[in-house]
Amino acid sequence: MGKDPEQFDLKAFRNRQKARNRALGVLLGALVVLFFAITIVKLGVQAEHRQSAQRPAGASHA
Amino acid sequence: MDLVTTPLRMPADWRDFFALTKPRVMTLVIFTGLCGLLAAPGEIHPVLGFAAILCIAVGAGGAAALNQWWEADLDAGMKRTAKRPVPAGRMERESARDFGFALSGGSVVVMGLAIGWLAAAILAVSIFYYAWVYTVWLKPRTPQNIVIGGGAGAFPPLIGWVAVTGHITWMPVVLFLIIFFWTPPHFWALALFVQTDYAKVGIPMLPVVAGERVTRRQILLYTLLLVPLSLVPWALGGTGLVFGVAAALLGLGFLALALRVGLRQSVPNDTMKPEKRLFAYSVLYLFALFAALVLDRFAGLHGWA
Image (cartoon, rainbow over all chains, first blue to last red; front, side):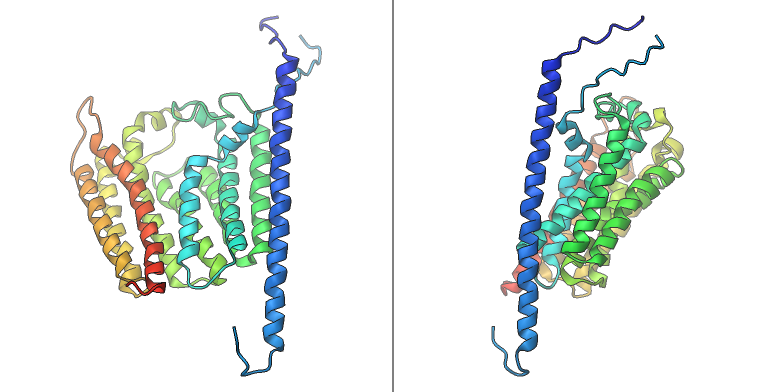
């Protein structure tokens, strides 16, 4: 029976789980925001390209 | 005893997962990556620039996690690394592996979708280079491990640059080479004052297998290559005078410290002050050199130089 079976602390276990869940939640939330932002920016860039492609040659403005 | 009682194991703290990414090394990765991105000719939307840097950092974190998964046994035997999450028993080895693969894969995919597949491919190569070529293959086999391993740390500015331009030119390659040649003197200076540790776990660090004298000569040799190389971006017209002057001054400092390390021999109970100083300076050197690169570009853009 060698080892002392580690006193299992359910409260500490739950706290650890909760902290992990919270960290993962924040992470996933941040990823949602990031992907949303990337999508919007890329859509904007594409729209710009389309516009400049449609513009008649020679007509350049900012 | 044979009763199958799977003890409910305490799940690893999220902070230990964070520690697995080697946040301190990451600061240098983020910084050099950002400098590559800012110094590159062209523009990138701030959101995309942020995403690119994030991917570089997360990729580096993933590679670091894979490194610690692979080297848990070695880490356990060294004072400097024994307290890392896996060798200290705060995390299961498989968790480090899965975490590493997830970060690596995720960062490459996001880089590809958000920025471009050339940057993503170089990021993938850099992760593979560090986690496999360096960690698994070369580190246990050759005392020149650090030289080749330095390549892994040299990728961030290249990736940052390519994220902006979309193609590789000679400038980002020179930046790559600068970090490549910077790594040996940087790391061997460290290895000189922690050499007993590496000897214990049988990693063939140069000071362990070839002796101190050879290591010191090699530090000097690589510094002699590094200093002129750092002037190449200016000499070839890739940067202005701001970078040229900064590189020359910083290089002279590096050379002076490397000379002291290269030409001395340690005595019993040596405090190894010149080595520690060189190591500390080398970190400062890289930060300052890349900061100068960015400064130079902005000086050029605003017509200050």
